[in-house]
Length: 257
Image 1 (tube, rainbow, N blue to C red):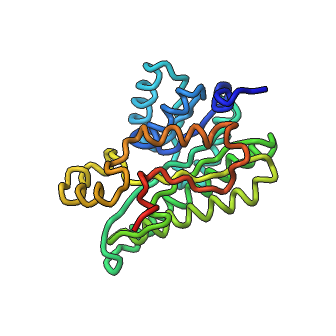
Image 2: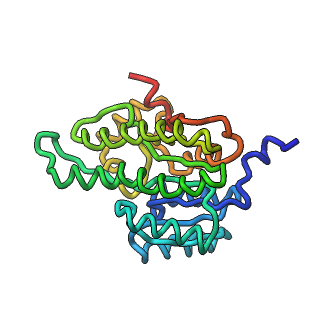
């Protein structure tokens, strides 16, 4: 019988992580590689992608870098076919690519709305669909969509972002319903407030940081490494009967008023 620790081993599996040249995406890729996976990094900026791949290779990871725009359906289709043909079957998909735009809702630009929705929602649909078609044929696969505490909670000046992450939550459930019969588990990972390049301005804002730490039962910002265990769980055989679930890694923010 397989030991419980063996059920978390990702050796022999290929994991594609979108938006993985920096921040949470890179941390998740590093964690999956540490659990044994062969990782495919993806982003639009080929130079930053190669730098990230080189850094992981220096740590002993088996890494590939494939740049394509996840908001472009044709580019996604071609990119996924290239990975399947040249690297191997994608066993794990992490839909991490995303962005933020801040403004009062009554002043929010239409162009920013469409850009945000394309990046945060369309990409999950495009990449998820393209990868799932191969997983369905193989009768197995793991899909992890990166949600957010804003899949549940709002904040001033980010209404379109909360709308997009709410959509990702429900798309995750829909994917699980449609693809579960094919041996595929689709779950969401919902980060709280984490220290990354994108949140550095908030980290440096003493007033905001004091409010956040006071609001968070764990009384601190999240570190990207805090997400790795949850991601490995959702990517591994340990979660084979977990489907359509959103796992919030938020220090307890969604548990309290």
